[in-house]
Image 1 (cartoon, rainbow, N blue to C red):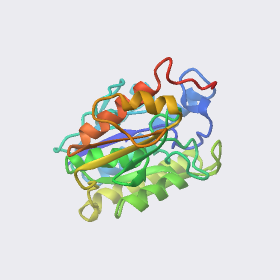
Image 2 (tube, helix red, strand yellow):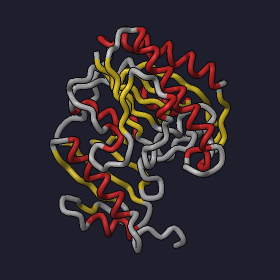
Image 3 (tube, rainbow, N blue to C red):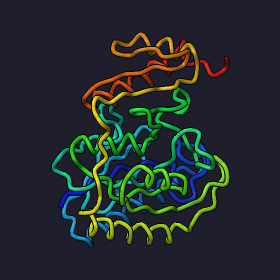
Length: 279
C-alpha cells in the first residue's frame, strides 16, 4: 500500500505568527522540528496499519522545511519549488491514499490561524464551480484527478472543519485552536504527535469508506484578486476572462490545467509593477 503525504507548515502545533514559518525568522528552526515530528507521527501510524511505501512532498514556501536527518527512514521525500502540481508533486494513480499534514484554512476564515489561500498577498478567494475552497480543497482536487482520496488532514480547528465540510469521512486532528489569525491555543507537541499517529492508523484501516473529491467537469476556476491592477494583468493571460474589477475566471476539463493556470495567475499578479502593497 502506497501513501502520499503533503506537508504544509502553518497548521502545525504552536505555529501562530508569520515569523514562525519563514526561514531565518523567529522560531522557524524549532517549528521545523515540530513539523518533522508530526510528519513522522503520521508515518508511524500508517505503517502500523499496513502501509509499505511513503512519499512526502514538502509543499510549504520554498519546500525545504523538513529536517531530512530526522525523517522516518521508510519515507522518501520531494523538496524544492515547482509550479506544476506544486503541493502534490509526485502524486499519481499508483498511490492508495494521501495525507495533508500541517494545513491551514482558506483566506478570510474567522479564527483561522495564518489563514490564506495559496498566495496571500495576491488572492482574496478561489472558487471551484462556485464553491469557495482553500489549499485543502485544491490539494484534494489534484488527488481526486488521479483517483486518490484524502484520508487525513491535520491543522487548527478551522482547517479541520473546512476539511470535514468538503471531504466525506476524512479523519482529522486539530492540534490547535485559533483565537485570532495570529493567536492560537495549542496542544503540546507530544500530545499532537500521539493524536496524529492514532488518526493516521485509523484512517488507513477505514480507507474503504473515504470518498475521492472530484469537482464536476468542466471545472470553473474563479479568482478574486487583491487589486484592480492584478485583475487587469491576470486577464491578459490566454484563457482567463475578466468578470469584475478584481475577478477573473478560467475553465477546463483537466484539473491539473486549472491548477497550473492558478499558479501562473499568482505569479503574474505578484510580479513587479503589478503587486504594489503600498498603494
